[in-house]
Every structure is written in structure tokens, then in C-alpha cells.
Image 1 (cartoon, helix red, strand yellow):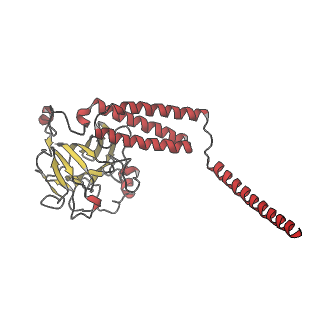
Image 2 (cartoon, helix red, strand yellow):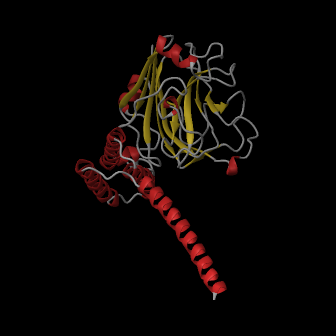
Length: 349
């Protein structure tokens, strides 16, 4: 009887200990969950999210009316990225991030609206049959504009630091210059960049371009073959939201003077997969970058802002970089898929 009593007492002690351990674990779990839960949203913040939901609904209605597969696909990727940002914002609300999200959502909507209103310029299948893919208007011809690409040949182009064309890098497809992406980004056999046979010092250069998702490219100007690692100033062209490499710095987004000066493109850049229209103007020491009709960057060669930008860039130790020269125009090749068309130039006297 005494042994049985001791056994019951022992069992009771073990049960009490187990219950105590479970209580402590339960308290820890509750504390962890309560700590992980975001603070409740205020009524004003809830109203903000209701407004965002209405904007997404408006966007979806417009997007569903677009029959172009590439336009819909590229825009949907951007919108899905915005939706992920909303999800994170709900977990950790911040007014500044909310304002930026609303701005970016409206900019995306405006880009899509501009595409719908002007599909001739932006359509992924090229302009309508009434215009050739590469053309000069009568006014442009009279002013002295010249096409740098005729849509049928590589006349006027050659490889960078080469007499011929780069191997397995470029092709002409449907009247457009098209890069052939390297599978798995295998090591290239040599430079894939194209440059113009001629050199230009003061000019207006315009071109239309389209990138695949995640792609990176660019056009360089004031190019010299004497600096292989830093041949010239680059007008950056990149998938701002979907680039898979290292996070982009402010001077590495589209239309920037690459790695030197950022551009203001929030309302100008169109969705990846659709056509963009760019322009570079070089007149004396004055330089302008344009994107879809908007002046997004202006700088003066040799100015303090350029000097500061160069000092913080990868070009800081490159002799002569940033100086005014007569140079080639370069289409860069970064292994990714991109398209160019309607490349034209006006030499300024």
C-alpha cells in the first residue's frame, strides 16, 4: 500500500512537471505569436488600403482590355511586383512607403494608358503597315537626319575593336536588330558590342528599343576604341524592376548616365516587353537624355555634378573618361535579349 502510494505520488509529480513545461512552452508560443503580429491598422490606414484595392481593380479592368500578349505579360509582372509590395506594407505600415507605392501604381497605370493611346509607336509587333519599321519623315529628311540602320543589313556597323561583326551576337529579324541571348550566360568568344563606322561629336540620336524580362542593355556615345573597359558614356537600358543581378543603384536604372548620374524616369518608362523611344542630345558640353518624350536627365560635361558622379563611379580612375570627343555610337551586348529599330541621327553644326 505504501509502495502504491509512493508510485502515485511520483506519477503525480511527473505529471505536474510535464504540465508546467507545457504551460511555459505555451506561454512562449503565445508571446512569440503576439510579438510577430503587426500592430492593428488605424481607420485611416485601412482607408488607404481600400483605395489601393480600388486602383488595382481599375488597373485590372484596363489591362484585361489589352489583347497584345507581350504588353499584358510585361505589365502584369510589374503589377504583381506592386501587389507584393502591398502585402509587405500591410505587415509593416509606413507612410513614406505607402506614398511611394501609390505613386508607382499611378505611374504604371499612366504608362499603360499611353500605350493604349499610341500603339503605333509602342506595339511589340512594330508600327502599322502605313509606316516602315525604320523610316524618316519628310521633315527629318529635309533637316538632315540619317538612318543608322536600314532594317536589312549591317551596313555602317562593325564590331567594337574589330573589322567584322561579333560572332553569334546579333541578327536582323523582321526589320529589327535583335540580340541572340547566350544560354546560361556561357562565356562569350569575344566582345559582342556593335559600333558605327562613323564618329559623331554634336548630334541628336533617337532610337526605339524593347527588352525581354530581366534584360540589360544600353547605347553608348562619345565612344573611343582606346579605352576597352570604359569606351564611352552609356544611356542605360534595363528592366528596372525585374533585373536578376545585384540590386541596381540610382545611377544604374534606365536612362541614367550609367553609374555616374541618375535619371528621373518614374512617369516615362513603359512596361518591360513594350517599345520605348529614347533620345540623346550632345551639343558642345551640354548633354540631354530623353525617354518617351520626356527630358529625364541633363548635364554639362566637366561640371561639378559630373565630377562628383565620376568620383563615385567605376570610372573614377579611367583617364579621359567624361571628356568631349568625336566618337562612335555603340549598341552594347550583355548576353540578354533586346530589340532595336528606327535608329537615326542628326549631326548638329
